[in-house]
Image (cartoon, rainbow, N blue to C red; front, side):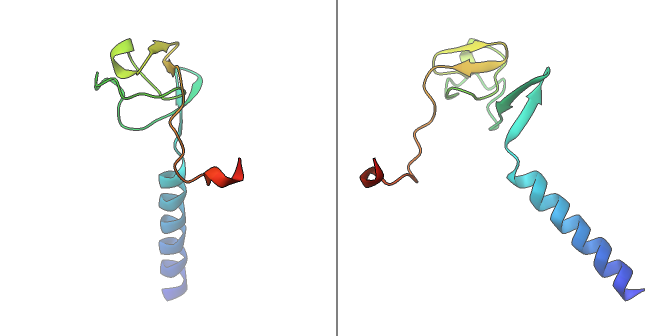
Length: 81
């Protein structure tokens, strides 16, 4: 009995961790990056982010995806360019 409870707990933890690391979303059949800005209207959406209207994006919302420049990746070492 202890083994089956442990296996169930492990499966739950793995499923939760997998869901937390997946940032891609399917909005109306379109893949986009989903930070929690959809419908916020704050204009912080970078290129590739999901959106409802132009107000969610830095540039504009086209087919539920922000267009324009992508978010700068600070984890990239500039010396590697």
